[in-house]
Image 1 (cartoon, helix red, strand yellow):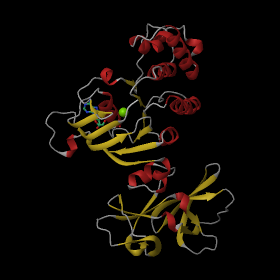
Image 2: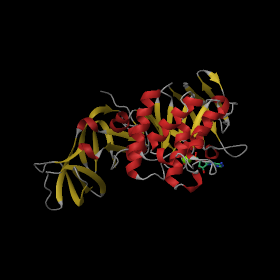
Image 3: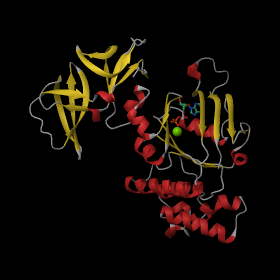
Image 4: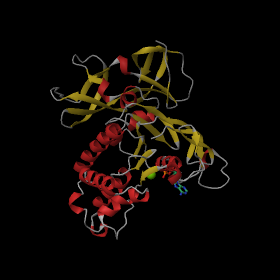
Length: 359
Ligand code: ADP
Ligand code: MG
């Protein structure tokens, strides 16, 4: 396993990039610690696969370098870097059996006999492929092929890093859940550097210790799942993580007060008048509550959705839509209510970026 540094990387697919817009990845400086479990999380097209392919050596960056344990590998192939990579679209040899497919990466490295057999059977067992070991891969369903592809990425433990590009897309939800926790267990056992690409926050948050949130070719935040939840440093992270995502309201901010739709709200920190054309207050639905005594910001309840352990009230505050998480036991009657914010969980953003206040 290796520590991986992306040092001042940028990547454009076309020749002679001129403006920012020509870059699929725009200046990234990141370190992946040896043995860490990481997720690259972001919407389709934000540059996740591009970043993974730069790490594995399938792409050479337009600018910057890739280091493995401090050694420059920018010009090296995947094989030289000793990477195991699972692609978004399964790579399976149809004419080989499941067993031979799983054994292939080991045979390539001249692993033989009992070690090979033990490893293939262990991975097959983990993925629920034991009974299909003797079958030709051609005859299998799409999800079985995806499992084989995943298995081929996991079968060698002596790699620098294991890279997974949305490896569970065609697997059914129940099994997905199971495989994700098995991957996590495997990470604890082998302690390999693992990087898992997904657009699904649940996958990212359950698998990774550190999540890298990407948007439009940039890294917008690197943090633990708690950090991303507690302190999104961009409104995009606020929306993208959490369900529903963070509420973002236009605000006027000065000192320790934000004014939203004419109502003053006390802030946990002091702000100089933030510079930026768009000043907003961010608060997660978990930290908004319906005021029991009716004293608070007046809202209009548009709808209440029961989602199991709690309800989500969709409300409007002077025309701005907000989500409020409400306990199962709270009774909402009528359309008028008042809401309160938990003051310790209010954040201020200027043009999307978190503004640091003074304590
Ligand atoms: P993600 O994996 O997050 O969906 P990608 O890394 O595949 O995103 O793509 C990032 C951007 O680069 C997208 O705008 C995509 O259209 C573009 N892109 C990806 N691959 C190529 C390619 N081979 N040639 C040209 N543009 C590409
Ligand atoms: Mg992709």
